[in-house]
Amino acid sequence: MTTLSIFDQNQPDRAHTVTRDTAQIRERLAEQGIRFEQWPTRDLPADATPESILEAYGDEIARLKEESGFQTADVISLNPDNPKKGELRQKFLDEHVHSEDEVRFFVRGNGLFYLHLGDQIYAVLCEKNDLISVPDGTRHWFDMGPQPAFTCIRLFSNPEGWVADFTGEDIASHLPRYEALAGAGG
Image 1 (tube, one colour):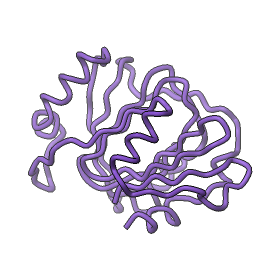
Image 2: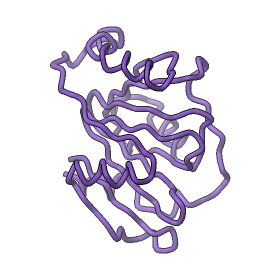
Image 3: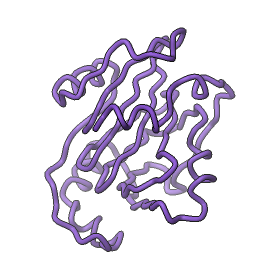
Image 4: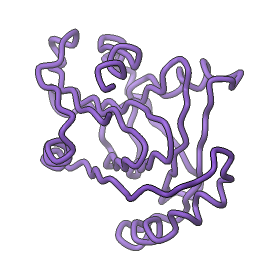
């Protein structure tokens, strides 16, 4: 279940706010300039190709491209049997920023975005049908868990795709990981 957990960066071991109410999640994130939506479900086969996924969500993708100037969209999918899952997980676990918005729509599965906003950390467990847009320059990281099982549509303004600038801060290592928080969501 989609969950928002908010931590104080000086007390990262315990969330002071936890909600699974979608309207509250949307409102709390909007207050911080974070876009959060839920798109209607599409019935897609488990082995849907990236092309068929992009086609199924074509109207929503076109709307976002028009509204925000995105140039490209692609699909990323990871499964527990991926031999590089540990390496891929580690790649996204350090705090970083981007020079463009990071937009993800979860077609299946889930993942945990951590947003470092002032002295608060917003941990958003995104699930199937959730869209999150992290504005450019927002310090954040992503945890897909030790057994990743998700498919996401990604939108980019930069045709080169995902480019991160790591902050060098170790804040991500002080907060509960996916294993602890994803269990709280379901």
